[in-house]
Length: 367
Length: 125
Image 1: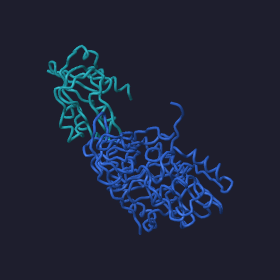
Image 2: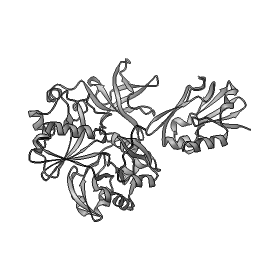
Image 3: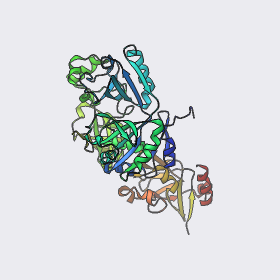
């Protein structure tokens, strides 16, 4: 043990519920509960599940320059983001690589960011060093953050505050949950409708226990979170995207709005705008193995003549797909859906093919 | 009358004459969680104790199953190809991995009996 793991405000509840706790980004987090990853995954797709994501960072950038300052670090159009709306984006480096991906909410007087646990310290240092003189940086340490995900999430939450039903996907609102004011986004990382809810740390345990009393709701761990996001074709920072991958290679061009494509003005804009114009040398694609063997991160992908043309960055079993699924970078010549390739696993060539993502259709509430 | 022995890698071998049937224990399947894929060795494969004999994959991760003793594989459990979850539901029964013709019976003497294994896993918490 090199250092003491941090605990979220829900730690005691996880242990009480029989969670298998694992170290993750410096925190002790539940990877699964006694029901198991398969059951937790299916519960999320069929009804509703609560995930503890309190390890993620919440940072507010306040002040009149917040928008222009943050736009200098990433390629999202924030000037045209409506109040209480949310946008997905990523901090880029000078080479066009990705430092972290994040959610940005336009709040009164500034912006609220949700950043990855493993990148939290580096992101905050990056923000402070680059734009710390233009904005007030407030790091939130006391909140719990949970995700309530699944098609029944809306029915459950509406019993506490009916306004949640009218929220559109990727919007934000303060809601009253059991007498506590919570900061709620209609968003998530599972491919299902749902909410991400910031709760004052000292109230989180009671609220989660209250939500778990609702018949549709169960707890779910990081294991199911990973299989759900893979089926939804959503990138995981550190696996599918990192400092060596560009947003265009990762298929994230949709998150670079028109004005920013025209104007640039973010780190690595030369590389990224050129790839938008000319195409990227490699692309992130869905890979569906023909057989039953899962393809894990690191597995090489070869063309018909045995030449290695790609590598799996995320892979495993998709409980809703009912078989193995993987996400891989392949040389752009092989990115077309239905391209037949081979995965090199334990000295064998296992046939697979390129497929469009998501593996499972998303069902978000667009109003 | 067959005898069942256990390894520190949480495998079991049920010995009947010079034929052993090998699988993973209840404790191992609980640790793995939902098993989604098993690769068993082909018939005729020569195993040396400690070699990678099989692969078992859960939703989350792949694990190697090491050969519990030297010998020639006489059968892999083909039922696991279609129904890998047998490893979860019947790890000591229908979820067996392979049968081996034991070539060095002395290796089995180093293994644990059921009581010793029970004590061993209690120590694993």
